[in-house]
Amino acid sequence: MKQFNKVAPITLLFWLMKVVATTLGETLGDFISMTLHYGYIVGLAITSALLMIALLVQYYAKEYKPAKYWFVIIGTTTLGTEISDFIDRTLHMGYLYGSILLAACLMVSLLIWYRTYKNLEVYPIFEKKKEMLFWTAVLFSNSLGTAFGDFLSDNLGLSYLHGAMVTGSIIILVVLLHYFTKLNHILLFWIAFIFTRPFGATFGDFLTKPFAKGGLELNTLYASLCSVFLMMIMIALAHKRKPGEQLT
Image 1: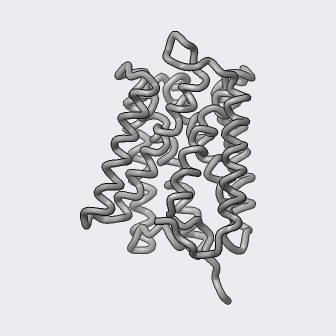
Image 2: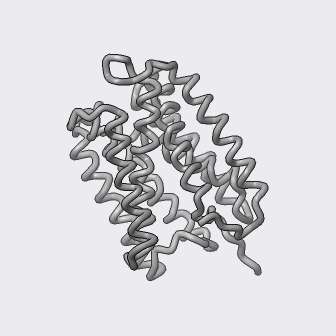
């Protein structure tokens, strides 16, 4: 039986969509837990249920479909926001220890992946078991990126734009290392994947947080709808591209 790839190609469009998806995950997570006043435990339950629905849709898809794939990415970024805030504000572990915990979880998930398949290649992915290992690593990496971004702003006192500059600089460094060195491309992928999360999330915070904290104090619902609109445009572009077409 012929197997079809289940994940997105790693292209320029992929990274643009990842940043917008993380911004949406931040504002949507805050909308559920803060704006609607559901709190972090209920917010965690709601976003977990949404992610499970997205995963089931993606799992039973026969091949990569951008809308289904990015539905899961948005689910992991939204749940990642709730996980990070739950660890900090409900468990009172703080963002530093939360980042350490989530980094350990990510390392364990990648270790299990490597021991099973002897590689950590993220594209293409055909096997459903490998796909689930991929999504587990994605969830932990997005949660880690959220916690690290909050660590920069809450613990180190950086403004949201300064935090974006820090994480953006790391991403630029990864790009340079990718094109001008022979460092392992899988390692560079996961570093970039982790740091695009706080990079996008800081823009979400910048849009929604109070003026006193350096934000624009926009409503979380309106900020989320703006990100949804951008994601819909890019998903439409992804659907129009031919399979295997790359933007490098």
